[in-house]
Image 1 (cartoon, helix red, strand yellow):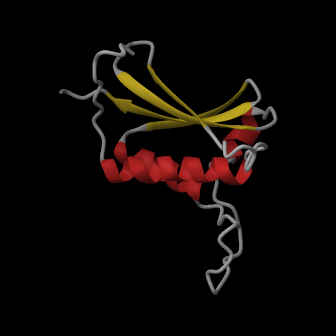
Image 2: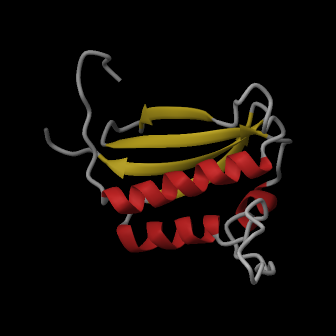
Length: 130
């Protein structure tokens, strides 16, 4: 990115907010560094190789994962729900599957990768006009 130029993306702001929220919540719950120095995630912003899309990544410290493990993270989990709604620290296993479903309906591309001791979850958004 050119630091002196603003970059715009074409997206539904509510869908993007939900996706980023789920990525950050996932990082907070599962990062090996969660709670250390208040750092839960690293944010990456870059353009794709063709320069037509902006890629936003949210990474958290984790062990290396196989491609099969990375793909399994997107599937709904069979978790139990606290009937009183009091157990805020336990995930419902729906966040990443929701992100994938939103991406399929909105046309955004999402993926994850294991690199440099991190798992990074990505969203690719088309560039917009100023």
